[in-house]
Length: 194
Ligand code: GRF
Image 1 (tube, helix red, strand yellow):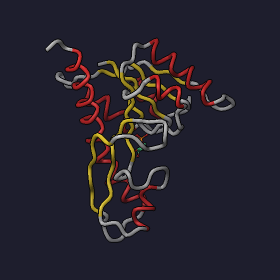
Image 2 (cartoon, helix red, strand yellow):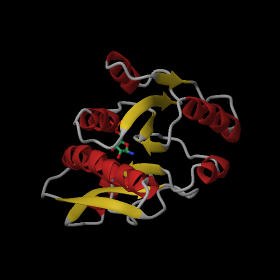
Image 3 (cartoon, helix red, strand yellow):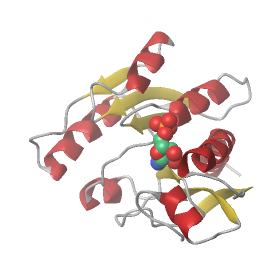
Image 4 (cartoon, protein in one colour):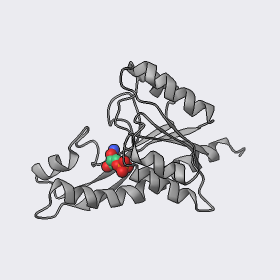
């Protein structure tokens, strides 16, 4: 299945998605890495590995207008499923509707807890014994939509948002490629004649 990954920054989740795609039995290939931030570090990483990249600065553009531009790039690359990986912009409902059920996101909390930013600080503040990450299908509301996979880690005494983020990020890098592969395999399966 042809996957487009959307990033805004570092791109470590994108890198884990690319690494997993190298396995012979991986049901997806990454055909485009697209960004709203031409300075995103992850773009250079993808480019060095021979993956097509696309970037355009969203600043000064209306949300729907920018989303039409990135949509055109994804469609030109014949993308069939999108993985948001640290894509730090809310998507227009038009965009989400037109890719309905075919956009995944990773969020660093055990959804439905802690949508939005500062998830690790909020988990520590609340005294939670566990934190984690969730892969979910994207709907127009932020960090909403059906959860398809989760991973849990303990919150340890003395954790700071940084130490907890590091523990959760390791799980993100394992969880996201696996969840994406599962969803891609399901799509391929649904297409193949019974
Ligand atoms: C990750 O923690 C992800 O869960 C969140 O933003 C961060 C992106 O990191 N949505 P990276 O760009 O994948 O390294």
